[in-house]
Length: 260
Ligand code: ADP
Image (cartoon, rainbow, N blue to C red):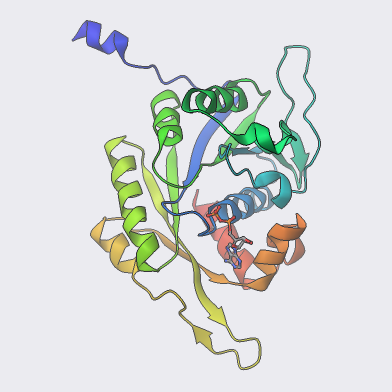
């Protein structure tokens, strides 16, 4: 048993990082990166004295540079570590800031792991209280590698309510349970859409997320509506948390941040 234990990969903390929180989804396009960006900026608003980092672990489709309006290449410090780029008080690191040539975005499994390791260990995260990690969609090698190599405080699962998303979300939940990563809660994104003319609220994707949460014994569920200001915020690199700090949507992001 002693030998077995020695062979298991050791979970090594990231230098200077206190809490590592994953944001994950089964399906792509459900708003995982949007949630990660707004959560990180909301955390900085509710706890200005805390240092917040945002790591884009989606090396195939990085969206943090666009959503956080950070397009430079990071500098290297004297310790040979990359210095995170900062906007809205959040320290960010993404493969999107390291490669400009689109053809370089064709990766093999091992290269992905190497790249993620570089984004994690090759960065001066110095005094980061919360590192929010935007993971790629699905249940792949990246998640396994993160879960096996890092002490993770917990994972937030983002999903929409349609069947096609719920099935893969459940698979993701099962994976995190098997990996002993605490599931902090589910974010039901794009839950409702309010008509801008009559204020009627539509449940576009149905409301089965609650059922899933009950079945999986996850008691925390946050619902975020579909809102054009959220889309515009992402597309313009100015998150809604910054542009509409008093909106009801931002209140939800802030309560999510406070919950962490
Ligand atoms: P994922 O990371 O899951 O692939 P994204 O965060 O990139 O998804 O979101 C996909 C698209 O949906 C983006 O254009 C984003 O602006 C938009 N979006 C995400 N959540 C919302 C929301 N609650 N309201 C409006 N648009 C949203």
